[in-house]
Amino acid sequence: MKARIIVAAVFALLGVGLSGPVVADDGRAETVAPRFNQPIPNVPGKSLVVVEVDYPPGAASPSHTHARSAFIYAYVLSGRIESKVNDGEARIYTAGESWSEPPNAHHQISRNASKTEAARLLAVFVVDTGDTALTTPDARK
Image (cartoon, rainbow, N blue to C red; front, side, top):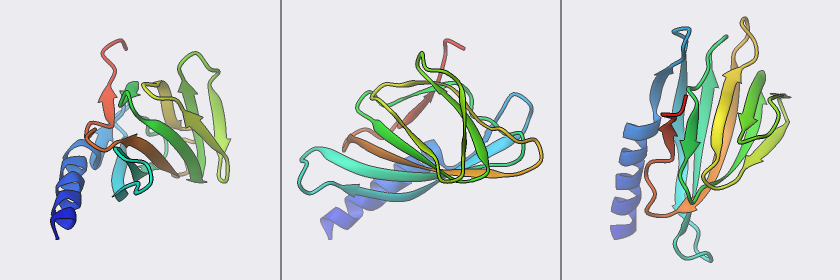
């Protein structure tokens, strides 16, 4: 029972920090929705957190960083998403393709590569259980 209350509280915190629209420079918004959050039983202190990111045509995320503890696996569910992490090259990923991001990654580009079709990705975080701010807008922009 206590674990359910803790998980519900974490979802509530994630909902405040991750769900809802995020407005890109051109006024188009992405939507981030929590899908899963569970401590990893055989890895004490770590949790698996999954969010779904929906990008309308032309939408983008502002430049951002992720939690210092977060290892991220991103999988494109539909459409085409352009991504640039740290000093890597910008690349367009299509449905079925994926990439990973190391802890404390600087995600400089994350956007729908199409102006006419929606795109959607699943982001899977392995993160310290206490980390609730998974994404922080980049002040270095």
